[in-house]
Length: 233
Image (cartoon, rainbow, N blue to C red; front, side, top):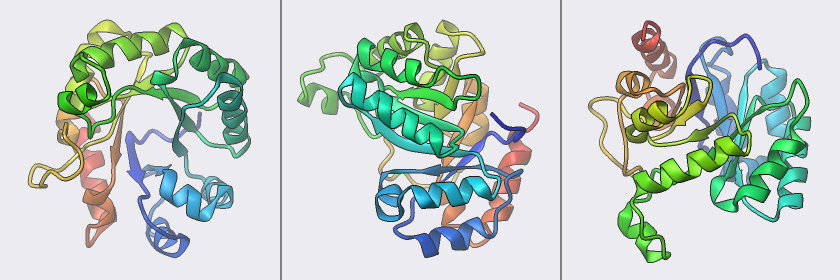
């Protein structure tokens, strides 16, 4: 963990290095942390992650590892070698996979390890279609408990589930919330969304924010405004 106190993680959901760095060049590590997801990592590779880390940014590597325990453990070790601040696995991988990931990152300076519960794009119909006949909220509670039992540091969840998770888990259990939108933003591919201030009030620790910042004419101003709004919450 670093000394960065920002609770905002900017999602670098860009298709190439050039566009990514055009934004990164405008940002400062004290303003935000950065998330690298599947598309950007697949196109640009670990070299981009290393470049961001070397610039002083806390990097959340959002690859949602989900495989046999040994494969996930090795992938987590490889991510830690890149110097990332946070990485994630998928809680649906089950107890043995979660435990293997935790064991692989058992060192003192290991990255924060969190688990994805139910994707914020998923609703009850989506779960039923794959044979899960519980509500998203029920599955989030179950998978978060499974993750904590395996020793993980926290989970990714919708802000709408943050309050109930905070009731079930201590303040030390990290809640990372995507699906954050400004009051006036429309809903797109996230089905369960909330504003930054509301998400923090509900118990979220970190907010993953993409297009409201990255597509803004002045992303630094938007980021500064969000930081100011949540700084006293």
